[in-house]
Length: 159
Image 1 (tube, rainbow, N blue to C red):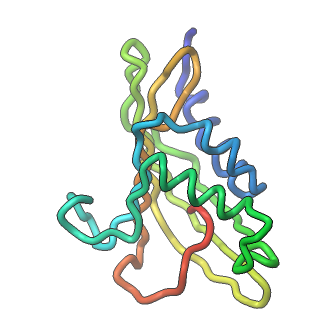
Image 2 (image 1 turned 90 degrees about the vertical axis):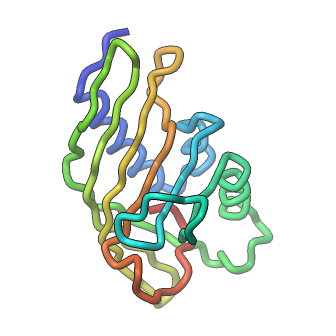
Image 3 (image 1 turned 180 degrees about the vertical axis):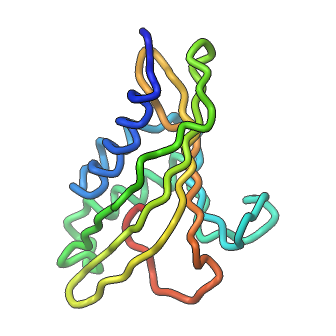
């Protein structure tokens, strides 16, 4: 399969739309099983293991989160939270079609709302992607909040 930069960019847009539409189970299928979803606590944090992070989720934790979001008995999600990603065109920082390895950098505004509460986060998402069996998959995703050191409430969904 021949892959282009546009295929990589389209993948990033498709992931954001999937999350906005609440298709979390489908979103899980984008991931490689050994991938991590990381949101550092500190600006330009290098280490997710020896420093506190806002989240550092493996496959088990991603599935647990999605199970909670999809659950009928998740009373903290009645009514359900909704989100909207407003993303800039992603930069493709690494493109190795032969090895099937890619890295993107995407600036975005993330809005999350539930009942009368709404908040906005400015962030940069870095995706490490791999081509596996002809499909683009997320190997790792890092979300750096512009104001990661600020106090804010719970993030219920997935920036």
